[in-house]
Image (cartoon, helix red, strand yellow):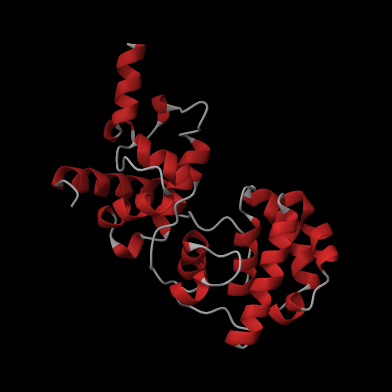
Length: 219
């Protein structure tokens, strides 16, 4: 169980980030749960910006799971090549689409376990889809930004994504489980940048042990 002082500090962190990034939302462009699922699979080891450059043409050619399930693998590979790991991603995308057609009537299930057995879908991807496409706060998305900031803020000592998620969940009101990742991702991209964190202009500096430590070193 988290220490009460850590819980209190965490809640102050979320309140501050919520005020700082009131419009924070999913950076992957999508209109449907299916599009978000495809985009999230493509986002592995790839930037959201690059995925958003690739998906418009992909969605025009394969607007439904039925279309993607019947897709030619080489064509899909050529369309998504710039996202990296394109052969594995193509296999996951077509396999996922076939499962949606065969088992779910071509619809993306709003259920963690049903999502996690789809090709190319782990807990992180399932959390993205549930939270952002269906408004279901089943868990917290832990990407590289969330991992890094949660560590710097001393909210976890873990390095494994699912263990970090388990540490964060008691520190975040369930209503904020989806948006907290967006807050941390925005902050990680704009201020707490990996190679050059800007602690001098960080709204969390007073709440961040790492920022205080950095200030003592520079002082």
